[in-house]
Length: 193
Image (cartoon, rainbow, N blue to C red):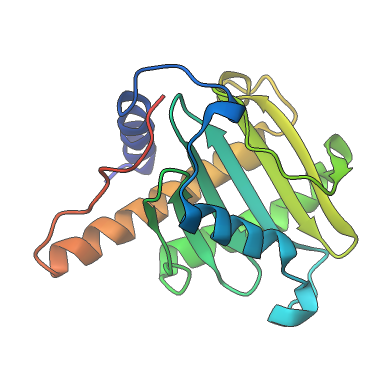
């Protein structure tokens, strides 16, 4: 199956789930989501046994009623979860997510110069994507319009597209696992634009 078509399909899936507008301040955030996010931001690289200069990437995209957060860590963690409580976790050991996650982490250091150091971690605004790069020197971030990233009009377009490829790999593995279990994936909580 063509991965570009799968990614496009997934983006269309996300874009259609919710219809009303919201700003970052308006999101209703599930407790489990807030806890997972806080845990990532408070993790120290030594605590998970990694030494890479950029040991984690979070890409968060703001949809009208929820935020989709992709997490890739150098310890093999790959997760995709949603501020309204849904998510897909634990797919890092699978070949596709593992490979693309490593590629994303290898790509990330080239883009630190486009970010600012931060100690606060706001959600992105609607129709925007925010990157958080977890480094040995702290966390840096930047936010851009999702459309600018998608259409190569922003310096962080390459990691954005690599992260989209990772989302595709996560989705493919999740669908395969659900098919093997005889159940359909529970994407009901996935946000849409």
